[in-house]
Image (cartoon, rainbow, N blue to C red; front, side, top):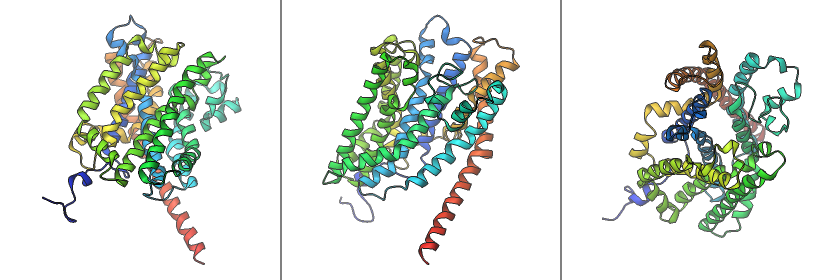
Length: 416
């Protein structure tokens, strides 16, 4: 039976989604946020400092939620630029892109920052440089912060990764420009896509080399908290973006076949994800990625964490619209909702943890994980829900209206 214009061939119709919201990716984002929350509650209760067991090792790698976030950012943010390189649309405007990122990232963060500083660090309010660095997410460039550990002051300890994320947001237009210039030397869509993947592969290798090299620096904790160490994880997501767009540009080409294979093998990918996570939970990655001082364990942690994130994200990223497995496993209503409020889950978790511990008179690094985690989860979900509907969504809608008004004003001026 041959395909007609009214009934496209299955091979052509089952292509990855390259625009719009995807519930399955929201589900992935929810998993990442919950893993980070569980990791931080386990660390705060002292559970991770107990005698090493299989469970403590598994929980100690909950920080893998960070590379999952980074892979998602690389995928979703670079996709419009990848589409432009491969002839699917125009390059996004840098000003509009940065404006949207600013509105997405900063307002809710500023509220959390004000609460955390007001509760725990009022004595440092007169330290103007530190306050400016915190308010602009540039404090990661301070080599000697007063909180000493390059993570963040009390209540904001997880924000080091938000500093890295913000650095990637700012760097992405320039990075996309360089990739565009490199890829356009190719004379066809296939050649351009391959050149993009080669460059992103080189960038990922470079990030591993950087991670190992900074161990010899005089201040490895500082250098290890900067963007170059994490470009490999962002690059993995950017490579997925290239594959999704390439598949749509060449529906019968190798990228489309690869996407269909991965989507059809989702269960196998997720099983492999669990296996790699288990391997990453062994001493092969050291005590913790943030505390690693060994070149081998550092290299293994960067690579294995990246593989965990890639194996989790890829089946959802490459699945066609309406894919049942991705929809049921990752895009179900609960995970999809938690994914929508995941930024709040990330932002508020330490404030919630410390408030709960204060209310229950927990001494530092004491508590019962089985009791404290469900309570902290419920409280964080509640606060994140309020943050989403009271701050994030109104700001997003306001930004959309302002952007539309600016576009209409520009068109009116151009038409005079």
